[in-house]
Length: 497
Image (cartoon, helix red, strand yellow):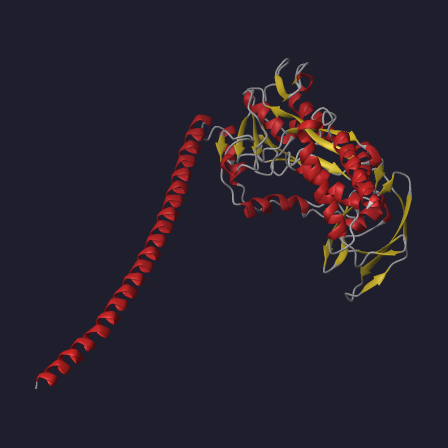
């Protein structure tokens, strides 16, 4: 009994300690929260003593902490020690790789394409090669992510890869081991080309550490080819570094213009990001393409250019992710990623969307000046064209073939080149949006009416059935009484006779 009491005290102390670690003000509010904490300890203790299997108290408490943080929003996160360590490593860029795009094909981890200039490319790793062993560890049954993790490591460290390659007869044969020295891999984040003699096209994959540099190189190359108009494509761009978004915006905005600002509960979380010097490209007419896959830094750039009337935006409402997270170290090697503020466009629009309130689905994100609804599957085909580019050592860089239809890009080009005015495009977009809303409302009303009719029909059928039952009962009752009267009359007549 004494040991159980001590265990209870220990659990309670652990809970208070963890809550205090997460929230510095928890102790000040301990009086009002004491009942809830006691309830939590009661539940924890009951589970520990009575659950069908043996439980780990540390795991239960860790799960409780995750529950607290998950209750806040979709971006705050409690990081286990392993996850927090990986986050720090990714942030520092301490890890390197081999430079190969991998995919699981027919159950095997398969090389799709080596990246030019990387260790894998220089060593002669070919598209279609299957990764069999990594440092003598069999990866044929591994998940892709686990195998990739084995190939990653500190820049300069060594790793051995065993691959099998298809021969002329179609049989896979194991090749001599490749011995690599891991390098810092800088993936391609920018694709660009001229759409015609005047319109330049630039697609950004994300906002990583070298995005701005690559964008500048692309714009310089496009200018040399005669670019007079620019399409900046941010569709399916999940974002990345805030500094990348700010730096890209500075390329086009005039001095002392607002790019974005943050605001939270505390005054110190208010921060403004403005331009300071003259832009490299102040006058080039431009359009920004976005869709539901455009998030975070993409939304900051689109919102900044739109609010400052520097570019018009075409596509669909963006994802709506613009929250500021602060990562705090916790005891035991764990960490906490906590939302402390949100991003606002120069005009004061909140970019962040409330995902948990379905009634606010049409709020947040960046709403394009000209909406163009594009089927997601068809839109994905447009970007798969970039992913289908395969680099093969010893061969020339493959030519990009673009065959998928892209109505969003087409609309932007029409406006840029004057085939249709922006105001006319906006008006048509508003009319189309109103029609979609009316159709949606009509469909909703029709579904509600159908549901009501069905309910009324069921109610009527139920009522009719009940009436029939009552009628049957009455008839049965009447039938049972009538013969009795006849018999009585008959008997009476017989007695009189």
